[in-house]
Length: 383
Image (cartoon, rainbow, N blue to C red; front, side):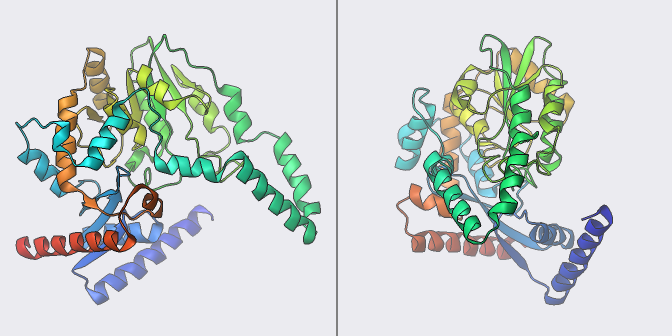
């Protein structure tokens, strides 16, 4: 679509949903997750503009726990209230629920593989064997419908010309762990975690430029592509990873791209800090006593040890504090997890979490429904 077509598409959506909302006058709009598709994000912003209450959820992927938001930029009201209520108290690991005790022990042990469940599922889905079987099915189908004669030349042309993997390989270097560095794992895109939860830093190059302008001259920024970014698109360049994308990153001052297979936990453990839009690596860094610089609105934004930045000045301030020896206080992390424990719902939106919980689908639905009803009661009480 051309720019003009995109504008008119937006205007048509705006007219339609504004009309629907004005006609039916809802008191409340419920979103299953943070709105991020074009139409439901537009509904969310119209609701904000018109003063209509909203409810949405975010899976934390910490056990089976989800957070309820009324405004995804603000975060969880219950979590904020519990953090304030628990100020001045020091909890122990034993004060946490069993699932959080197990989670904390796993993710704070630097010798254990704490790869998130969703990453394990992606790796399984796109394993060498499964990829081979999928390609075999495609070849058989292409032979049966005679499309093989069209597809084969296109594939080989794409394989031998410049492609996304070749461009990345042309600028990657092995990391030097003797250097002081900030680790930047890129978010998978397009996805809710960067649009809209990354705000303007949906442009991840802007994030890296901000970091590059903020670090000391003798520090390096190691950037690593998300391990699933190429699984769906193969060799193709996309609107999120266009031709020249990685070369543009590599040209930035003190910025290096490292091979995609570089172990993320080694990078976290050796880094002075981890910087991300909303990535899980920021949360993993905190649990492993590494500071995290956050540019977006992840669910863990309220955890101590997080530096939330939105421009070069705030980024410089964060790095200055880190350089002066900022230390993660694990007691504060436990205190945060206690507040998180008291604020979260045992329920899930993402189907993949079913493999990480003993909850039945019906129990999950019941817990989420109760959370919605309780929030409606709060709205009616206070508004």
